Amino acid sequence: KPMHGKKSIIEHDGKGVFAGLPQDLEVMRYHSLIVDAGTLPEVLEITATVSNTNQKSKIKNPHFVPLRQGFGGTSRGKQRSKMRLEDVEIMGLRHKKYPIEGIQFHPESFGTEGGKKMVENFLFQKVLKIKDQKSNIKNKFKNQK
Image 1 (cartoon, rainbow, N blue to C red):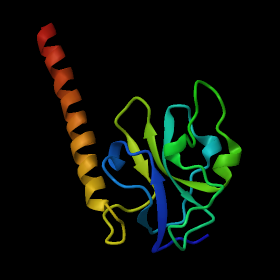
Image 2 (image 1 turned 90 degrees about the vertical axis):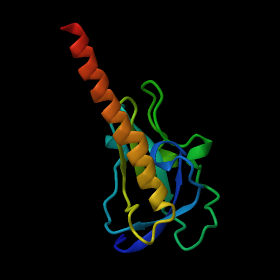
Image 3 (image 1 turned 180 degrees about the horizontal axis):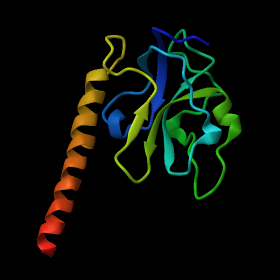
């Protein structure tokens, strides 16, 4: 379904780029790309979703299991629930070990609620963390000489 220049309402896990943001955020999409949950490697976790069945208002689909109530992901080799993933599109992913996240919308858009906070979270939580990791690695090598 074409989603160019359209808004979607997402639910998220409240961590990483979503830290400090309320649920049911309206976000702007400029593409129709979707993630096939069946192809996700074990090292990625689902962090945000949008219901396929209710885009017009913030009234929730009664059959949608929100992320904050345990939706998605895998646990030590257990398969994801196909029933739960059928009614949603994945809008956010995070690597379980490394400070890497991906989202399927545009936080910088005027149409994305909390977009500025998402960018701030990325800068402060990801960029500074990577910088600290590089600094720690450099210091480790200096101390070994």
